[in-house]
Length: 142
Length: 410
Image 1 (cartoon, rainbow over the protein chains, first blue to last red):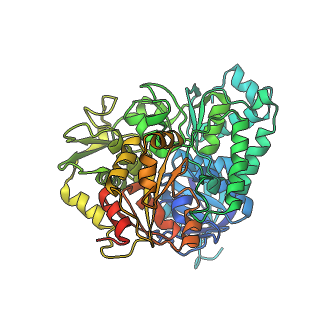
Image 2 (image 1 turned 90 degrees about the vertical axis):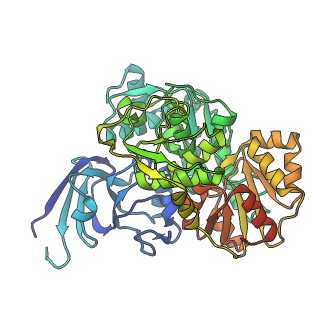
Image 3 (image 1 turned 60 degrees about the horizontal axis):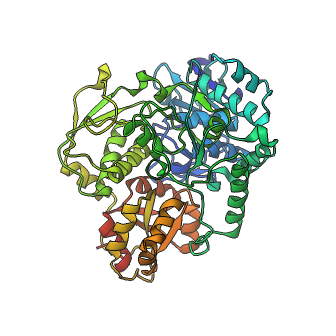
């Protein structure tokens, strides 16, 4: 398929390529994750029980709480961390946490990014340019 | 971003590595939010519990704190949010010596920066209240929302690294709630019933927070019958910030700023008795045995400490249940002096100072103590603690104490 290019606000962290895990839900490292096991642990989260390690998380918004600002750095140091965070809109805590932990993060798209991207899509994110490319979608070939 | 000469010197490393790291971090965050420049802040407040920091975060602080004294000292009064444990009680709560050792390392590093170890999320009640129009770098969502709303001061949510950076540079990027444009109300709510206690003020915050669901929404709440009082606004704001990631609310006649409305605010959403009752009922577990009853999140004021002591009224906590009361070091000293701590602890309850609960290795405490069923009067805690494997219920302070004494919910 011809890559679809989604434009967003310039973000933070390095350019990366990986597989998307998508939900119409919000995010906090403290509220939602078992950070030892690398899975979503909050029973009411749309991704409950799923592993986030090495995946590009595509979600709606950030939840309350300031802990994520430290936690992304801590998760990255242990190697059990999302590859990147792609959100419709984040709060300062997620931005600060991604900047501190050097985790790739972008937000502010034209349209709902949780509808534009599907779980399993292979993505390339360029935070400096403010782009997310959908390189490959299951069932549609490369 | 527009930087002045001093900020450029910091960025070039001329004022040492801690300030170079700090301003570089602030520029990255500021550019992400299209900040035009930096704004000087009067205080910073750092959330730095070791459960969030981990080994990696503590090692980061230690590296930065190894700089020469003149390079590492914070430039504005910088306070701390609650810690991960209280050395006086951690063994009783099933926390480990390794956790205490990590805390000790974090404390030593923070002290090396000249940080004041206040260990509190109620600094606006106990340390130095903000002033209207003051720019601050507050590092706890409950502190930020109270600071912005009740006092009319100006702060974003500043996570630990960013609050430390603000302490080191004495400024913060000018975006979000530092700007008038972000402070206009975007959503309207009309209250048709009065919350009856602190847990219901928290429930109201939860209802409004769920409806808002974004840092960039500013709710305006009409129909408040009488000024709610500091502890009620504390629970309301903490829950609103927790459920909604909201950092500012307006209550005409109560909060500090005249509330300008954004054009898109729309019609008011009505919240009445039925909505508050339904929110509380969503967490109900009648008849079930209770493992732990928690008064925390936010830490208790001196008035709340007295209310807990009075509610216990000389009775004993049930042998299979733990009652934990968390307050700030300042309030703990006052409660000690006034005999409140002794009255609470005579029941078998644990009074902890300088910690909270959810940020205190809650998952490990659950495992060590076999805790699952939790009862609290904090809507904020009810919201957070599910991810740590607890099943929480929300109840009034009196019903929480009854549950602790009976060992089950009635």
